[in-house]
Length: 181
Image 1 (spheres, one colour):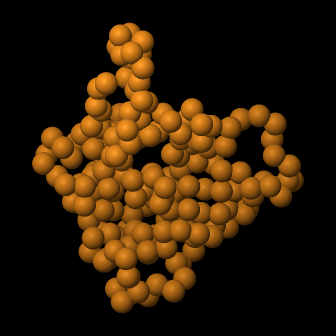
Image 2 (cartoon, rainbow, N blue to C red; image 1 turned 180 degrees about the vertical axis):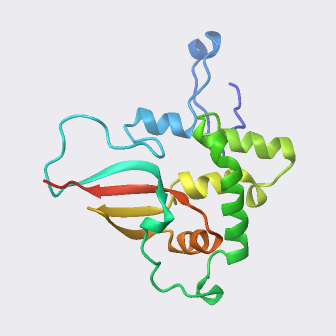
């Protein structure tokens, strides 16, 4: 059995001898999730019949103008940051701006790309670009509920606060939108 070190989680690989003989690579965590019917990170709701009015639809991760977002509640200054210091968030948002052209091109639109990017530069995860990518496109992405023209910040208030302070035009965010009639 081969070992794929590009995955960021310690997940044992599963392959049978027929797969190995055919040169097939075992599935990583994302592949396993897809096989189990879980949506990929940033994937919008599947197409099909339009949802009825009043339902909420996952639009996926899209760039949202910071000016369209409300002022984050309960955040006034650096003393309101507990998990991640504001300076670290500023570094992450600055790196995100460097990363956006590569992400938007599709080449850097996955965590494996940034894992390899960091490895080639000798960057550990806490100091690397993969962490930034996962902070904006992973499970802890900025999450917005959108009802008409109004957004509500469900997750990522601190990132929105810092982005606004830095004059960043748009941030990637998972948008869950209420369907209107």
